[in-house]
Image (cartoon, rainbow over all chains, first blue to last red; front, side):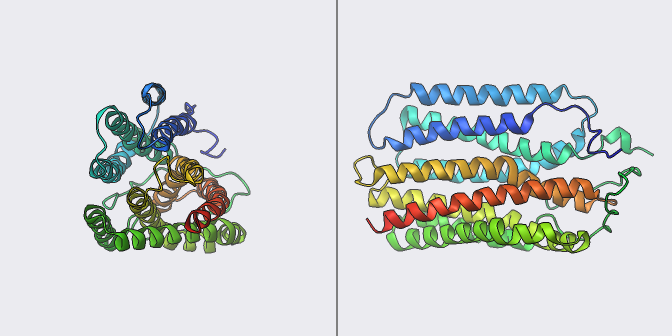
Length: 139
Length: 207
């Protein structure tokens, strides 16, 4: 049998990750569509909170998987985290340059944090799911 | 990801009828020389945003946006279907030469187009709700948002995963097939969405 079909039972990390990204994208569109008017932050905060909950749930579900290639997950994840931290930093710089402040800045900054953690997690997960755990590699 | 070394894995059985494993290939997952170009481009974006002058912002937005749209359309609607019909060795060779470059090019052109575009929109007033064609601007946010979710959630992880798989002592053809299929379908959907971007951007440019 192929190892693709015998991989450990995995939680729907990619689907949940995409849903989480969709929520912060929706929050960002809601806020930016109303510029320069001040809009109630409530809907954006709810979307961000749901997105962060999905991220936390995704991490918790993945941490329970037995026989997962964690060495590969962290090897890829740390580099991806660095790359996405740089892009998130550039976006944050653009926000500050445009004079964004107050609640909208806080919501968008936290959205960037979710983005900068969740995307590397998705990349690392996709690589690691097709890998073999470190113990299985021992001779 | 430049320093990644992939340890040898045990012999794995392959399904009967699945193509033989391609030979181990020597390539960089992230081309190191390309990182210098990326750094230069990012510095140019930062300088353009800080100076807030029309021409640099317009140049970076149009150049980045055009590259993004054309690459997505070409990859999704032209190269993708061709790639799917190539023999396994030919596809592997093309993949090892194309995908490392894509790993640098796509995030760079997307970041340049969006960062410069946002600043340009601020400067010209396009992003403000009082702008007459504001609904078109919001439509562009939605299209870009959908493309970003597909690119970040499906395309980019598949891109990295297929390169890591190809670096292994014994790459598994079935894994590469699955990941490449995901990459090509994602690129195809994004390519179709780029047509919507073209419609919106030409509408905004013509007032």
